[in-house]
Length: 254
Image (cartoon, rainbow, N blue to C red):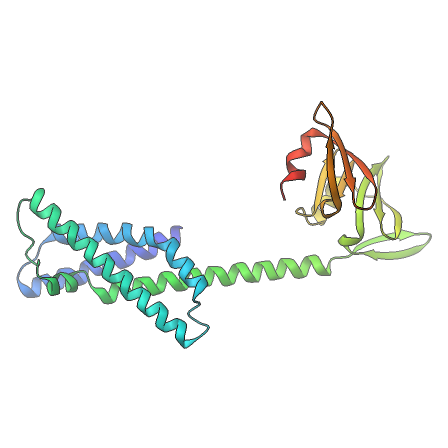
């Protein structure tokens, strides 16, 4: 959000500078008009940012020439709307508050004062700003997905070493100073704390349901609550695991 506000602020100031030079070239400079247009543009583009993001997701400008034309049309429309809204406010405030006529009331002059090219540039930079964010999010999701899919948990049994994928784990329980992993391949004992194991496994899938249990939430069939808020988790594998009301919200929220 701070990046978006900084970007919009830069272009508002740029537009004010260009508008000031244009007014001075006509010999009718009006700082009040420039201020109104600047404030209008700042709020307009901030309010439009969410919609621009939706348009960017729907018509990705880097995917085809057709989408570039669509985005150009949307950019021109948004820029024109900003100019119209700004000029309406200028006329209203200049006639009611300052009680004078804007020196650049002419539509052409008004359009050039609130430079449409700068507005269009602002639109596209906001668009590419969101496209970059979208790419970063996609990369992060891809990396996380690869990490989870490639993750294997090393366990041993009868002098043999096994590599378990998280999907194979049904639930984990504590037992004295170790943990017992209940899996599709049987039970495995590991000298590790339940808390540290929960950090290694995907927190969206593996839920702490009790101080002694960690459960694969994808295997929860239904929840049976007692009158005190505690209860039993019935898994699709037929296992029944007790849960504590302390962890109920984490179980139900995925």
